[in-house]
Image (cartoon, rainbow, N blue to C red; front, side):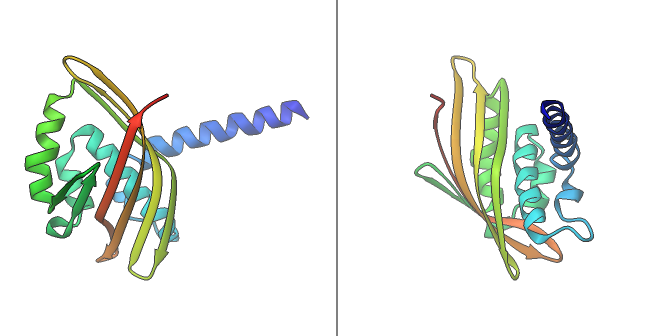
Length: 163
């Protein structure tokens, strides 16, 4: 019996690792496969946002964020519009990082018509010149289905140091 559980556990871990390697970096997949539920597509889009941010892939983020309809709240700050967020917040921040790990998990996605939302947890690890940040956080995202693809309209995140 233990061997069966161990084999099931090993297969599950391999499946999750392979799924993450395939789904997270691929923006096209994040927009939904034929037959994929909208909830899965919302979760995949959110995971793709994190992966593109971690890679500083602004071209991918251009397709994942809702342009000037985007709002981002981090802690007590708010950014309005993708271009403003990208140019005045995200790029200057990422340029200071020596390394950056930004990983969502426990994504709970929901859909009602053309709107989707998700609550999630995330790990945030940043190496700066003078210090290292190792935080855990929670967030909420609101997505809109446009032209058959999900895009992020709003995201709010907050984190604290890992204990």
